Image (cartoon, rainbow, N blue to C red; front, side):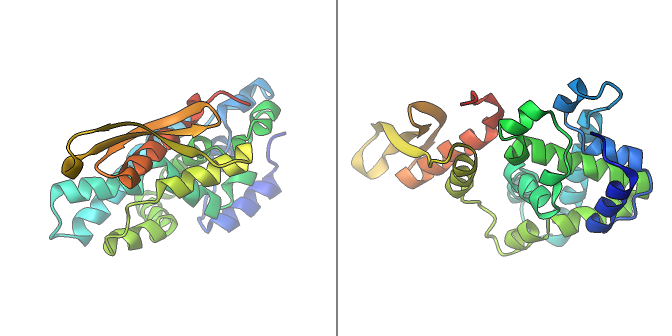
Length: 235
């Protein structure tokens, strides 16, 4: 059922942002699956579209001004990590969004409240609400506060995430088991090998990656798996 005014006001206080348009806030917390259960509802997809752009601009501006000595390529890699789905999903969790999102019973039963893409999309939609209702400066403060942890990692040059751990956390929460990594190809001379590795859950291939070491290839496979979570068939 839709969130009532008191619940929405409680969410506003928890988010520490002075959002006055509670209708817009509810839309930001409405996954498209919920539309089948409430015909008058509007999904957060349009807000997500706007929030993605606001988020990218704020993060790019922050990195540009904060790190004047870093090359464009380094800034681009740092931005890609800061606005990546796993990072935004983690920020959504820290804000308590998993319990706030409206979704269908079927989506919830299939693990929707833990799905990285749904959490990241809700975070982006929320950014759009703060921007539209409170202005750019408020949106900037909200984003930088929510992403504080990854921005500190970027400052310390420790922002390359352990994607294997993120993937294992996801598969354990949804499927109650950890992925395994299988070497499917080794090529090149002994001093210059390239490994191709697949991340698998039972016999299901979740992702594939290459690297100059098995560790690099496993991380690449885990990252590809995280990027394709919505394509995994339900158990």
